[in-house]
Length: 430
Image 1: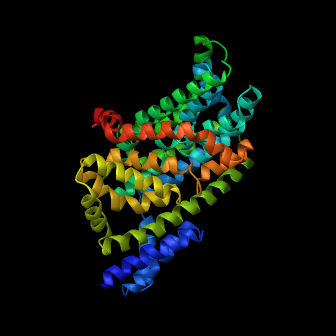
Image 2 (image 1 turned 180 degrees about the vertical axis):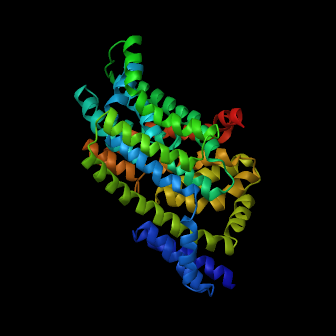
Image 3 (image 1 turned 30 degrees about the vertical axis):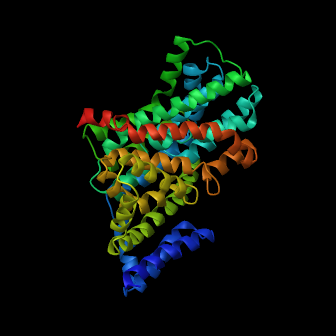
């Protein structure tokens, strides 16, 4: 056995063992990288240097800003306004509150960028409202958790910033624009599934559509939706970088939450910023540790070996694309989103580009795959949050969510094999 093969076994083997032992993922990534570097004869200081290098990036500064923006807006009382806007738009349909849940997630996702925040914020309002109106609790919770993944695709998504930084040379602005249609496709597929179930179970309709009420709610929600316009339009038009736009969005969110919607006091702002620090610490430690892990992968030529193995299975681009999705879905069942993006992008992106998948399209694929993973046991964090918010056992939520899993996989396959869904809008601005 060569020294390189032994180092690969140490790197991947120790990582998998620690994951199965439920050691926190950041520690598992960092320790496995340390063991690998020691087996390669490197000094432990190499780990520290690479971790510092991994987070010393101007582009990565957008991640804490976007997270802060989402937390401020989420705590600032915008959930009720977005729900009212969604109700005015689609509440008249059969299963109207389910449709409202899905559309509100699309709106809220453009502000929070987090499936967990979406589930906790909207779910705490909509799940009791749906149950009171005659919907089953497990169905209401399943709709909430699955629709929350729309927020991962709709900009500004900090996970897309992480992917762009890891992939290298991928435009954050193009990724932002690429997420709109896949997010809408996911919402439509979930709405179709909800409508079929609502008709079979005879769930109620909402009030008839009223154009005046819709415009009234649109005006009320304008200040919240404008935060997304500031970020996306500014980046796409080149007025400022993603990092600069995220900093501006934080200031804007603070003003809207405190002075316009008045959902936050200054005391509440400091408490909210404290929660942001907790989240940011987890994310940045993951990025730092994954940078060291990525260094080991590169030095050991793991991406090239993985590419050779997958390409040896089949020469068909369709089969390879399905294998890439399968790998990401399996990883999503045992790992959280950020480490999957950080670890697998250097390995799988070269394979994807070799079969003609654009890096921007692959970014959407990997984010959607990871989003599905957030809803699958045993490590489905959003699934746990939804179960707690809806007060429904996780097993019942998974069973009720099965039709929605099929809708999400259908959307994933369309994104995989119809590149225009991801690339059409970015192509208009190139």
